[in-house]
Image 1 (tube, helix red, strand yellow):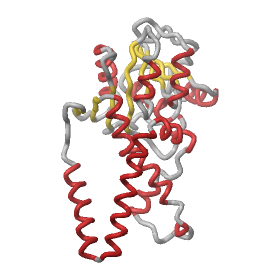
Image 2: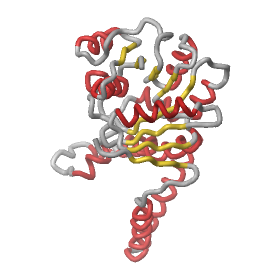
Image 3: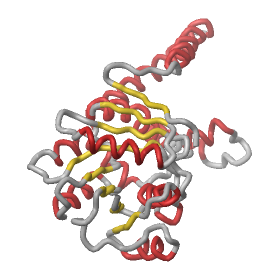
Image 4: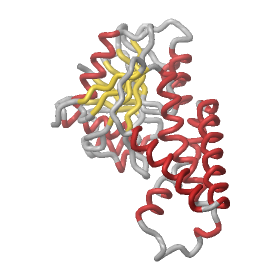
Length: 284
């Protein structure tokens, strides 16, 4: 199986390294020269791709609009699998299926990352124990989906979560995008000045993702703005509820906090319904 990874950032580089560990050799392509040269020098990729007609699988590890531009401006082998790793999936499906294609598209989203980016921080263990979301619709080729599922398992992912693009975007607005926005808002409080010595694990958890690249994340927010706006409105309602409870007294506050604790406890039960299928792989 000939594999190419287009976009040698943190995720793209780590895909190459995880595939190498699994016994595959991936070629690479990147928009700028330095990451490509680094990947070649370190053996992260086998060679630099000049074109893409010869590959069975092409992972497109670029931001959404850049991923669409890459797909539209290149030629792929008949029957090849083209798989993106973007954090929004409805946009990608609409764009990919807007015209006839000679390849099979499979949308994925690795639920793994770091606070730092670039291939210089890539590692072969990034996906160990993580989940891979694979989205599909009536146009998804089952054999192509099975190939990506096989590679997912071999790259070290612990779980594979299958759902529609709509379900993915709704869930990711809450589990990822809202968390980044909360962190960004939290660090704008004037009390963040001179906090050294007053911080513990809770502060570190809240601020860990405050420094992410606004160029990357603003695109994701805007492409999923309806889902994200709904989650922001609900969060604000719950914050105001807690604020009112603090003003009304301790008994009221305990009730509001208890409700949140119990809701969280229930949510930790493993769920797999008609719209979400979860497959857990055996440990490596």
